[in-house]
Image (cartoon, rainbow, N blue to C red; front, side, top):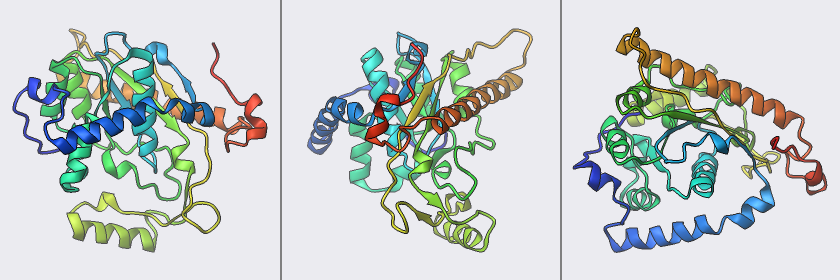
Length: 293
């Protein structure tokens, strides 16, 4: 969770009203699109479980995994939280998204997202907002061969630290399906992968933003039809025990969050493997895997 966003106050950051005419227009369009997603959800039938784990007061930090197509998680997770609790999720975006110009900045603002930083997260928590963060950031999106559904958090402890400071419970949001829309044809340590890392380093100083070669349907970049599988895990407490040091507790919360998310990702892959509807074959709709009631 990194960034250089300047936060004036929790009230200013948490306010929901867009400031400019373009932001207001974008908010209207995005809200209408979000409200109109029900027919799409009915058609694609995403597999969703664990909504009962969402704290009813909306005061929680959602921690998810990025897939090759981040639009999947950015749409699905807030949609189902809003359906369950009637609350708008505030997403913390990777700082790379803050370099996309005025239109991209307006889109982020209209969506209720902010560039991720400890200050931004703290301000939203002070306002008791439900928050969504992807600790892997943009570098977790580009998946080379063999990296599907792997977390790339490395030494990122920021989400755990700020959740502990504000006693915000953590709810994991595991998503399967987005890494199956495309097949990566290159490995990170291969010739192309090393060249891509070199180019990424020259362009923005970040070798972890290297891009693999992908293919979708056949040799094209058309995405494959894939069902999505989403699980919200049981809330993870962030209240530090008296006999645990602050640094050790931060590391423990990060480790517990990653372990729960990885376990759910593996479980969802097993569910997906046995689901005849995983490729959205309409003939298999009636026998699609469904969460236990």
